[in-house]
Image (cartoon, rainbow, N blue to C red):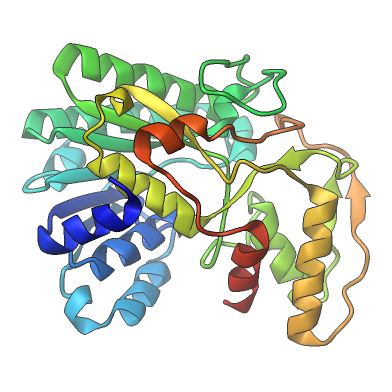
Length: 334
């Protein structure tokens, strides 16, 4: 089914969804979309890298009636008991809770493993034990590691360059195992560089786009690690939500046990990204933004990352709706 068809199906036959990590950036957008489609949503979060404010914003956007279908459960995916409690009565699971930062994983590899590997395994087991058939989870483009292909295809993986990358690779191994051993219909999505409103610009591990927007708006210096010629596939968060919902609803058995690239399928280098954001911020503020400052490259970062989206388009019917410019314009305005 196409995305419009899936949305119509959900409106006519609402389901109960568990979204882990849903007080975070991507998770809050998933919740917003599901509530707007008339779904019942349970959120499990421990605010490890998220904030209650994201869900408050969602409640304000969707209105009182839809917000009444939102339930919050405070829990930690490292606890099997918390996971088992959270899945009770649910039809669908979207698992987004994670340590989502390469630099943080370099600093805290053991904690990364506990959250991203043990936590994901706990959630898969809880879903299987409760009789849930579908388990959709976030993987990452970081699994490609030192793969030399400039455009990443799902079957060609390199060696992991960070504990974060290793943890996401292991999640994919467990997902395939749970399909083969227990019949759990797992679908992984390898997110590339997701951006959009509500992405946290603060902290040592902030993603580049919210960090730069905040710095430009506050007349602070903006830095690029390296020459700025390294490239990324920047994908607007609403397109990522589309992929998650399509993965949750697909009947195509080719999806199960596999992981799919989710990106725009276009590479943008950091110098170009800086120029685009500077133009949008200057339009918004009417004030000049100074030139970028270059500094040393960051350990664990890959040089080039762009998604081949052929498989996700053919198997899940994924069709991105936003260009980088359109997404950035919405993000800067919010």
